[in-house]
Image 1 (spheres, rainbow, N blue to C red):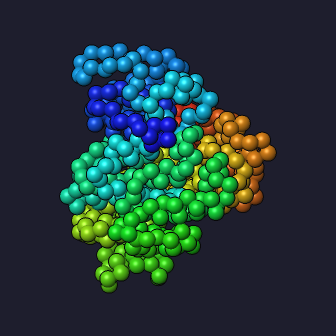
Image 2: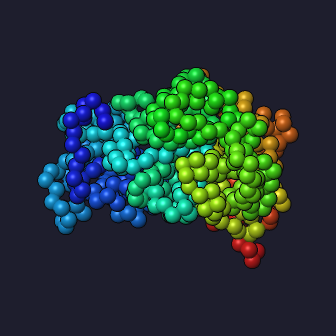
Image 3: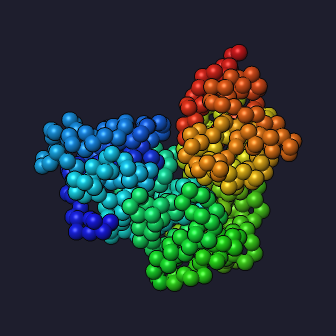
Length: 495
């Protein structure tokens, strides 16, 4: 909890809790957890779009679009009747997401009025981790999917874990669940906590055991170089107690470097021969990703996942190593991994029309783009693989990966690149150029085109996509509703 709130007592169930930036994946999940625990929850955001807007609507959580002090000065109408009495017109607690700046009018009001407040990861820690065993899934890549696989495997082992994951699990229809002790699975994000706390989120999560999938440069808006990122992960490693466990991908030199300071037992996994848990004989085909697991005790087990890609095989290996080393039954855990349908917005098939498959994926870092396209190429070997890319994240808007992105699209037959949305969110002189990416792709012999907006992309795809093609849309946003607009515009199967 922040120093200004060091004496604050958590409100009792039935109290009003207000979330600023409520439509983010993590914040919406937190809102759901708080409601599941009996609180009255509302919040605000600058905009809302699926899937989280639908999640909040289904939970009957009131959302104000646009920030205003009026949102905090009046008890929402649904909260005025029924249930526990609410003694104040102000929220009992305000939770401030990390998208909120210090000059936000609601943030200024909270501080000036002396309302109790805390950050998103502080709220997770104080409300949900007492009396639990936190399993923190971290790394530059694969956190959401690895967390999801871990939950699925725990369920197959007869557990009922709590979880808070930055995505919607296909298996459960949400990214959150209170569950029952002991286990609580958390997606451990290295991004900063709030405008009043610039430390990484995962430092609040009290890890008993953790996974580190990978470490490389990302989040150029808050980290100046790779050394700063390694320092953040080193702090996480040092939080794990001596009787805890760290499962880390030993194929990454950066991971081995930061784990050197661990007080707890460290178990490495990966493809290299010096890992205790090893992945071998990987075969990726339509609908399956199969591989052998060597568990370090001389046992070899074949695993076949329903989610594609080498990266997902490694994610599953991490989850399996973690749970088996924690004492779970290996075969039961494998059954859970094999039954896991994945996460929304991770290679999610949004629809098929006219024989054309439309896929949604969150990938935006160059390595994630490369791994996703490679997996989809193996999964959909027939027809063209068309990649549609929106450089929308705080890092992809910057020029740091300008020279790396062209090599990430080698598995695609055609690449469509949207203009950078809100380019002024990146500093002048350090802005990504979509036009330059298109030019560099053409130099590599990959057909590519530049577009100003989603409408132009829909028109072009309707003209060029053919039966048997696969279109993957790569963005961390709603891309102006591109998925639905495209599926509505493609010819139906009768044409």
